[in-house]
Image (cartoon, rainbow, N blue to C red):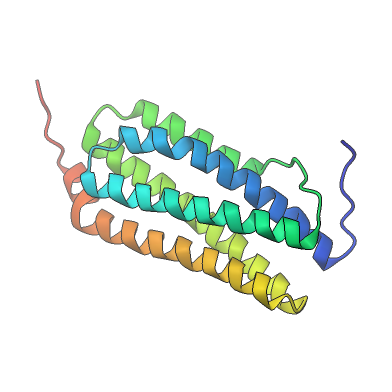
Length: 171
């Protein structure tokens, strides 16, 4: 495939949406495995909810592609792939379940923060391009990410990190 040409803000937004779709699919494929690795019921529940948000994002981004009649580029998001690889690597080193939960939660929050930035930027681009409906869609995705981030922060503060601080060591 030849390299895409980005010569307008609209082309840049289209390119970013192609990356969003690929990134969300990568996360969607990784999350079930990560949910299995979590021991905290509340963490599992939060990640299940996050998986639902990701499904919504993919559906809405695909609707954007159809509406814009754009060709989805097969572009990976190397940053997201790195976050996923880093999460897998860190989890493989965790030998204690409470610490593993803290590690997983922190890695998911890093992914959230990246996506909050990306969706906020897309919403701003859509606003400048007077694509109000699409701007609202990107803003909603940003709000979903912030919601999960807030939920995870509370979970870290009141359960996960406290348990990881003094994990129970079994002989």
